[in-house]
Length: 357
Image 1 (cartoon, one colour):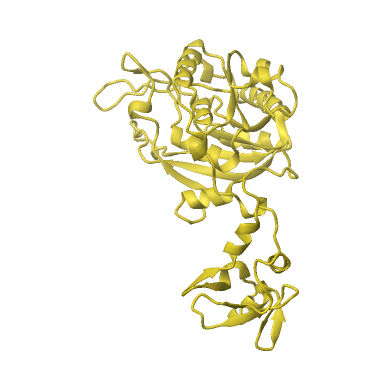
Image 2: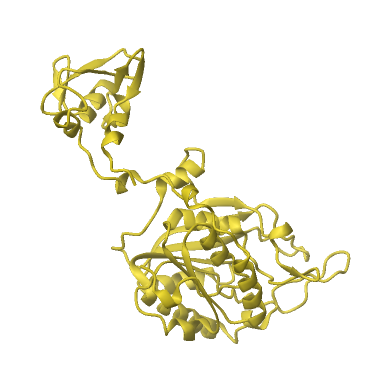
């Protein structure tokens, strides 16, 4: 449930102060892109002597690591307070700050789920030639506590990744082209994040109508992608220039049609339907023969939901595993029933019994 006066709202103000005004356990998901404390001492010059538009803004400058750690502890503490008990948080950073942030995240009681490497397809080169080109940023994904039943849309991510489990290394380009906000040819924000990055994060760890917080809104990418994907959003941005640009950008963003926002449900979130239910509801009759995919093996369905193959009796899973010589097997996909001249997995029969959303 979204608090009405916070719903789809952007605030121009200090993140820590504004977070203190928000009720406990308000948000389902938080994405935070805090100052990195890059500690840049000199201007960066390209080989052609042109100046690099690097991050030398005042908002990224801190007197010491101690000052930065205190700032980090304060905003993270507030974020944990306003995060729902089953919510999760993503924090992005570079080698300058992410290790300090990670320690504080653990100290405050968050439970780290993954560190994800955003491998940039088109990183900025190292112009001084004194170290490796910094081609990635690190994201820490953490639940509010060890006991949190956080959202992870495993099936959606697997479908997104051509039916392969998605790994924790993501190859995505930095923000450029038409997506990059510019004012008279100059970048509005030096560290604008690409929409593709937030698209993946929101798909993976939130659901339609969830409430998403970004305490360092910047150019507004989190709010833009939240709006597109049917999530509610709340963003805080201290710098007026960025706030104005983000507000305009969000206003001009169109939501994706509701009919296209449905995602693949995790099997764990679906109501459990035992094989025996198919018999008692008349979907499949006792005595029906079921087969492996090649119709070389068959078993008969018994009245109690067990199946019999030769001299062996047991569940659809146990008998399939025994035939394969495996420790376990998903009987719903191993066994098939005959329809005309074709075979279909018995899992299709189970799907008939699931309530339509």
